[in-house]
View (cartoon, helix red, strand yellow):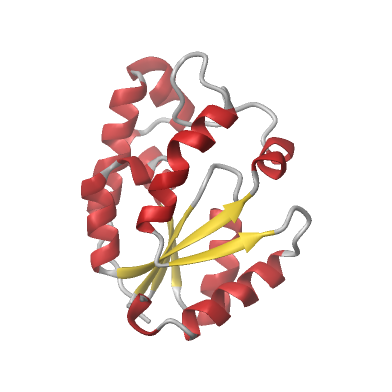
Length: 172
């Protein structure tokens, strides 16, 4: 296993929640790149999108990804981090990337309003549009894929993630 564990996936896939539990079980630190963005920019994700625009937000997200310099840490990335080749190259240099794969209907049930949650979306873009746009990126960057059933218990997702990490030396 590489030094860090990087969680990627759609907004609402559970990266932050699973990440905290996974870090506790492994005795790792936990970092959420969305919180790094908010701290660096002194604004919520939605405020950045609303006031500065989508491209500015994506630039902030890329910079947050590039600024992470940690060891023995579970890193929850923002759902659109995979759109930055530079940030993902940096992440993959230092960790094993785990894609939390949640089916679109389950995501739709979890996310009530993508326009207020700080989800990087172009005007008029639906959750389904975002899902279809990003799916190939998640698959490309994933060292491991953990399928998350609609009503999965968090502990089961953490356990499955650890099993896959243990079977995957050096993240491959």
